[in-house]
Structure formats: C-alpha cells, structure tokens
Image (cartoon, rainbow, N blue to C red; front, top):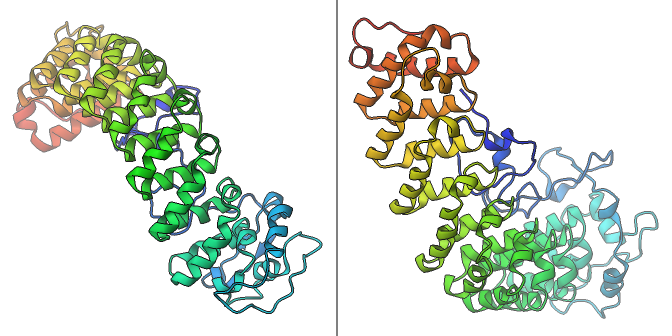
Length: 474
C-alpha cells in the first residue's frame, strides 16, 4: 500500500531532497525537490550528476531536423524567442576579433546575419541541417554564438567529449573572452561545465580564476550556481578554498536562496571541512530557524553528513533543544529523521526519549508520524520494545490506542512498521492485540492496510505466529 510523502501532507510545493526514501509510501514529489533538479543540464552526464541535458523550452511549433545531433528521423524542437535572440555584444566581438584561427584553416562561408532571426548565417544553416558534417574547427569565431544557442550548445558539448587537444584549445580561447556571460547563460553554462569536466588541468585552472571575484553573484544566479557546483567537483583543493572564501559573510543569504543553497551544499560535500568553519560559525543560534526552512534544512543535513564531530556538536546541541517542535515541522522533521538514520547512538536515544510517552499523539501527526516510524526502525531493541508496548499496553476495547492508530491515515503506517521490525514474541503480541478488531478494520481504508500486512505474515508462518485456530483476516 503506498503512503503519501510528507510533502503531500502540506499545501507547500517545496520539499527537502536530501533523504533517499525508498519505501513505497514516498512519492516522486519528494525527489522533485532536491538536489534542485528539474533544471536542464549538459549532455553526457549520467543520472545523479549535477544537471540533466537542456530540453526544448516550450511547446514550439517549429521543429528543426538536425542531422549531426539526431539518430533516425528524430526531430528536436526549436527554442523559444529568448534562445533565438542574437546577443549583439558577443556576436560583434566574434566577428571583429581578427583573422581566422591559427589552429585550423578557415571555412568558406557567408558571415552575414539572417535578418529574421538575428543569427549568423553559419548558425542558421546548421540549425536547418545544411552542415550535416560540421566539426568544431568549422566554428572558428562562432563558438560563443553557438554556445548561447540551444542546438549549438548541444553540438559543442557532444564534440568536446572527443575533441583533439587543438580543437579544445580553439574552443577554450573563444569562450574565455565571454566566460562570465556564458556562465550565466541558459545554454552557455553547459559548455563551461563541459570544460570543467573534460578540459585540461590548465584550462580548468584558468576558468576557475574567471569565477574568482564573482562567486556570490554566480552562486545566486540560476545558471551560474551550476557552474560553481561543477567547478567545485573538478578543481584542485587550493582553488576550492579560494572560491569558498568569497562566501564568508554571505552564508545565510546563500542558504536561504533557491540557487545559493545548492552551492553551499556542494561546498560542504567537496571542500575540506577545516576550510568551512565560517559556515558553522554563521549557523550559531540559527539552527532551529534553518532547520524549519525549505532550503536551510538541506544544508543542515549536509553538515551532519560531512563535517567533523567538533563542528557538528554545537549543531546537534541546538537541534536537541527543539526536538519536539522540529519533529512536527514540515521541514524540521527531515532533519530529525536524518539524525535517527545517520546519527550517533546517544543522539538517537535523545530523540527516542522525546517521542516516548507521546507515541499515540505523534503517530497521528502529519509530519511527526514519519519521525515515530524512524524511531521504531532505528532505536535500540530495548527502546523499540518500549515504544511498541506503549500502544499495546492499553485495553482491547473499541477505544483502544492500537485501534485508533490502525484507523488513522498516518498512524496506520507506524503500526505497520512496528509489525515489520518487532521481535518475534512482540510481533505475536501485536497480532493478538489486532485480532479482535479485524471486522472493524475491514470498514476503514487505512485499516485494510493493516489487514494486508497481517496477511503477509500469516501466509508465511500462521501456525507459529497466531496459533492453529487463527484464520486469515482477509
């Protein structure tokens, strides 16, 4: 039976992406938010990397066959007006930059502009499949324009993966003159990312130096933030530290920004923790506020994963001061779940201690019920037994705690989890407690979930679990 994610329990469209909930109850909504991620990305990256390939940007009626980029009769739709717009400054620079490239002989072509589209004749011909065998060397003095075009950017990305050193250098020399504008461009940023991935160490160093002095505005920009993330993955540690230092004094601004938070997360993931102490210092007294923030809660989780014990200790101390509020918060509950899954035993026990005595109430809460499940799953055997006993130790009347939980839209999942993880003797007790309520459970949607769970165990080992007189509830 599928259970809705915590995101579905709120009207918010935001949800942390940091946790990997593989249980059937978690929907795809959760994954749509995190490692923010529905944005287009460069060609050639496998699933799970920073950004997927850039799609067509709308339901345009214009469809262009691009022979060099297609297999069979596949058609790639043209980009909308923003993509077709000619960048006068960049284009003029390209056409007035001097003679042909010294690396390759010039391609004889008409350099005039198409009056309707504002594109160069070469790009327009390429988009209309008039150059099916076009190579990188044919784009001399046109690299920037192609990089800022949806299809041209794809072409360059593909070719860079197998380009010769001379071809790479030719492309690199041209993009370097417009590096910042490409970093912030909807299509150009992917070409820059490709160079961080496939460029030479020297080229990566030069590009990283182009980022320096502009880290904050790039981190807050939709496309620039992706370039910084890719750079942090690919450059040397010394350069990483140079980039990260520019965020000192701007940490909270970045953490609360829809783009900047990803840069901070990547810093924590890739950079030596000792170079990140300024981030920990910025969080002092802000842990509760950030844990209840849609972006801040992600950064808190990255700190708990990657920073040293000395750095995480003050963060955990603040979390423990607000556990009861956090486990009921739409974002804070993810932080508490993270501690239960990955934290130290003593930190887990502190959270279980807060939940004990309130299992009935918290299990019926939209967000806290997830935390109760994690407590049942990750507590010690003794702690788990006490949590289960808390819902089984009351009467078997029509108003028993266990029946209330089994009928509830959230708490029924807690009971299912208890059945799954209980020791055999305690599972037998649970199933005996459930038995008197079977006929009642059939009347409730969520009660049927419990019956399905019972059926699973009865099918496996009915004689050992319920005794010879117990029949299947379904």
